Image: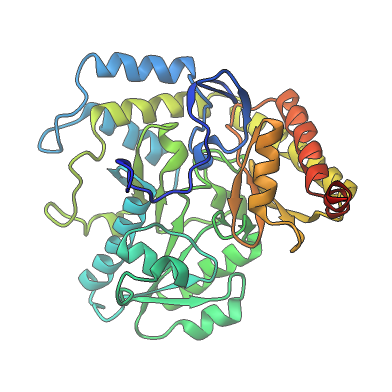
Length: 400
């Protein structure tokens, strides 16, 4: 018999009841170091006092009124995002998939309104992940995710990630945008080179098309800068954000330059819950912390410390780890074919460490941005033990 909660996930048998900082406790008292952060979402960790207080205070006043009325919390959050980004205007929604869906609509609307309705195709990349709606599934292009959902929505071309020749070959009169993640999270924690991002910007300028940046997983400080594309010294025309922007409270956003945003006039797009007072109170609380002097410097410092530790682990465990990849506090261990990321994830859980599997047989680490060097040391110790569990020779000896 099917369970009451639809079985769309392969859930680990870990029912958590409370958390603090980078730690979680199950209902039976087991403690875990959380280096998954709800898939890079709990940016301030668990039960952060400032975030908790902001949500509680707003919930006691008014949680939702709808976008039929002004929402001061949303107006403040949008102004702060504009001030700290390339964007001139912001639209709020509830998730990364919604943000990407809206970004795709914004790109198409821009081209239609500027005299090029035929430019309704976006160049996307192999290994991408943009969401689970029908349009974002098509933009993702993963056959496994598309199976059983009918014909894929048209309007997307896929080329190899990092291949500028393939990008230029794909641009024709039907293309109106390039959609790219600075780091492919689900696709294997694969970072785009900074030069590749700069070349994408140049190509968009050359062909008069839009650069659309998916920063759902990389944004709001995860890379050590507020937005990951800032490392390349470029600006997109439109960008999606979600996950860490609400610190665990559902919130997404589309950030756009005026030339794009002005075409999403009243009636062209909407969201019942999007940008409600409670969500935006959470978003403002997250920015209070992330934009505080020295916070992003600390993220970058701890991220580099973690990177060095992972390189040392990779050198210590060559029978399990092929390499380390990623950026900032979104990094991955690329595993040998003989050891699956699911096996490695389970071994980490057995040692008290939470991680997330990613594509290309990668074990993803995305700790809260408030993680300390001491907690990184503990994570490395637990990973070391988990890697020993997965070392092929050790498995053979155990079988004997």
